[in-house]
Image 1: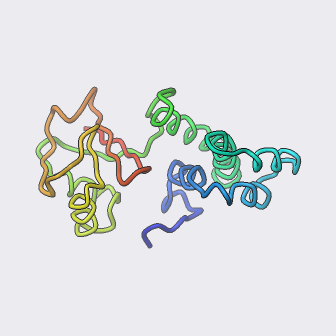
Image 2: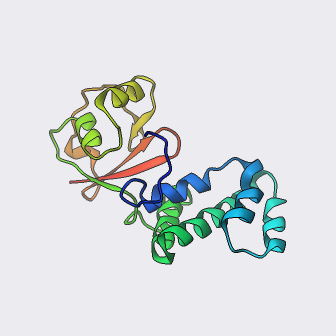
Length: 170
């Protein structure tokens, strides 16, 4: 089901799993930290008391700790590095979910085959609602054909919605 969070890495990648916890509502951070991690309660209370931009530290710790428990420390580190590469300008995108792509193919077909969309109709709707970006540009054409110029060093970044990123590799 779309939007479901699975423990199975085949259904929800460790990166997507990490991002889910990284994006929980500010008001739920302390509760999630206390129920889903092994952090000492003093630390949970300290992190839960952070406000505004500082709460992002707590969310990062929550995402890392829960991902580590479910997928292991190595996968948690990979997910954290991929998120830092996208949002912090640090690290690299090697651990971002990747989708094979070919120049001359429709972007919608590539993303549907890569399971970014459950169906082509879902992809069409997202494109029509300006919810898909290729690189820094919004995709406006549902029949957009991938070009060489879309790729830098054999890769292109696709953003689905506000917070889901994928790397197309040719």
